Amino acid sequence: MRLKTYPAAPEKILKCLYRMKKLAPCPTVKTNTPQEIENIQIEILRKMKPEERLETTFGLFEIERKLLIEGIRNRHQQYSGEEVRLALIRIMIPYELFEKAYPQAKEWIRDS
Image (tube, rainbow, N blue to C red; front, side, top):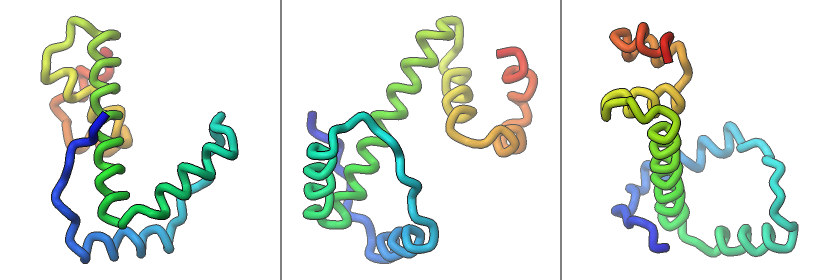
């Protein structure tokens, strides 16, 4: 599958991402991927340019978003397009932030 292409990120954004990584490293995630395969994946990522890694990240995020939307639609077939959008946002951000950003959805979320 070919990932959707995005314009190269400005150098400023890339520098910011590197700073964030240095300040708050990502926690190690346990997977069922064999160590040999994981080493190959890491080597491929290391050979990529920073903008290619960023493009890959955006592509994976888009795939995740589509999978979440399909899962919401399968579980809640009665939802309108707006309700699916709100349910997706509710999954992706902390509840307190969702309540502040979408006060009109407060009652709807309590019922779902």
